[in-house]
Amino acid sequence: MKFRFLYKYLKKHLQHKNYTIITGARQVGKTSLLKQLYFHLLSENEEAVLLNLENKELLKSLNNDVKTVFNHVQIVPKKILEGETKKRIYLLIDEIQYLDDPSNFLKFLYDEYEYNVKVVATGSSAFYIDTKFNDSLAGRKRIFQLYPLSFNEFLVFKRQEKITSEITYQVSEPSYVSDYATNTYTLLLEYLTYGGYPAVVLEKDKEEKKWLLNELKNSYLRRDIIESGVDKENKFLMLVQILSDQIGNLVNSKELGNTLGLDHKTVKRYLYILEKCFHIDLIKPFYRNLRKELTKMPKVYFNDIGLRNAILGKFDNPMNRIDKGALLENFVYNQLRIKHNQSQNLGIKYWRTADGNEVDFVIEESFNTGYALEVKWNCKQFKPTKYKKFRTAYPNYELNCLDSKNIEILTY
Image 1 (cartoon, rainbow, N blue to C red):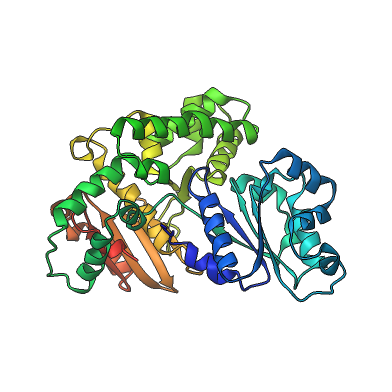
Image 2 (spheres, helix red, strand yellow; image 1 turned 120 degrees about the vertical axis):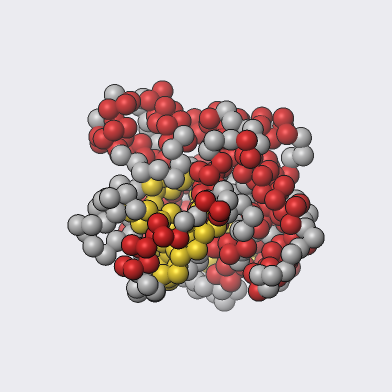
């Protein structure tokens, strides 16, 4: 059984009384994670039930009366309802956003059965988690985000566990040259082409990989458009294509509006939807001097490189592509994001000055301390003197170059 990086955090959180909510894009593996947690609970002789709200009859029943959820539990419902048992029940609910009022559903269960009922639920889109999960759940839930497979998880899914241990050893022994170095590079090129959606990674045929990614693009992206109420579908899709072609670049919503013939507010709303449906991330600038380090615009990265390539219709070998540097930069962002996913108050930002000096990523680990990364396809292109301003302004942030042959720092 292939376990995801997030699994250990979810498993640990089962002991807490506040509810566990797993969010993420469609098809990233939330249902599989929920099933793994379910079988773990059964192996521990816990009382657990797995409910899928794509079942229309079940959904109708729960919308009519919250307490009907106990009809699916083996413990006598009366004992639960009247507080006559100390036995804890685990309700694992898939696609909870389909409920008419998921907030009220969870709040009622928490307030009435705080010590008897633990809910673990998945929701396909944070757009719905934001709009339907209101403040009444404050202090009653913790949200965990599941991303497409990281490169480390990708290697496990490809049955290349040996490589992951070699990468880890490389970090502790930089002079060590692994026999797997060439194979690792080949796998990296595959990852940069097809990304980390589990079904795509497990598929061996390249044409089938492309078909799966195009299906994600055509079906699930369109489903997000419909469910989030986008009124100008063609303009929205044009925006997605433009963003796909400028990963790692600044996002100027006014310029995008002029290009698409949309007003500034509509562009902002579309960007919000793309973020909340887990297709893109917008990262903020890092600065101390507001006058010299002048920009409020975010930089854009895609949550999955394969989906981004499908949107552009480009599946060539990254080595032969003009956008290979941008692809690698997006890859590095994705790795950093998962590596630091469970860290508190840790932001991934970029640095840029009014006169054009720039560093790709700045990670603040504590106040005025952290590290910075500049991404190049080949670090021979890295000129240390170019970053003198950054090093002078932020001596506590060690700056390193990362390239396609030196990704060990991103392991976790």
